Length: 115
Length: 106
View 1 (cartoon, helix red, strand yellow):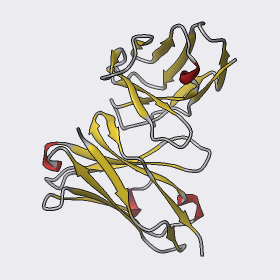
View 2: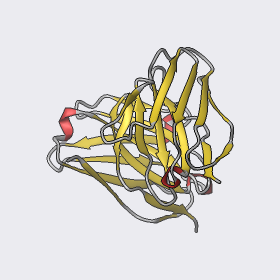
View 3: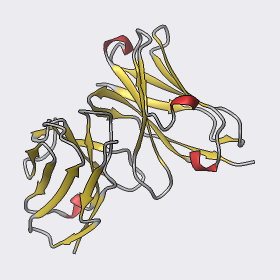
View 4: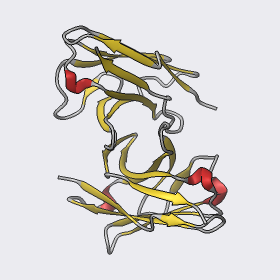
């Protein structure tokens, strides 16, 4: 079955760039769109954006100027870069396959922004 | 800007009873509405898509209804394992989530 696994640094300094990777197994990454969603501690879900191997992307306007998402078909991976982070970017970051809705999801990875 | 409003914020229901969760969109989303269940420390799990279609493996006690701006998730005959946060999400405009409803089992 399709499985997703997020990976990346758990601690990022303020003003730096948060970088995460989602490794997809069980399906070719070129067959679907892929998304990043985050959840600050104790709060709700927030969609960041999605990308496709063709290079097309759609970002949440609230983050558009800070976000970059890309697909690496050779590694079956989907990546996220969020620049100029602050403490407000501390959250569990999830990747998910997009079919309009999100399914399945990775287990999530906690990223803390702190000096 | 699309907004999704869920009510109530918290719902407490006895085992075996029915729970009704609501989700309202600020603009019509047709039937492009999904529901998710999230338990502590876990990723959200898709329950319903297309407003009323159960995802694979979801028990029949979960049902969704509605279209346009008003949607309902009904859980009939509640079980203890249904205690969780429930989120709605539209995929007609952007990918907007509601703020969630916490379902507690009495």
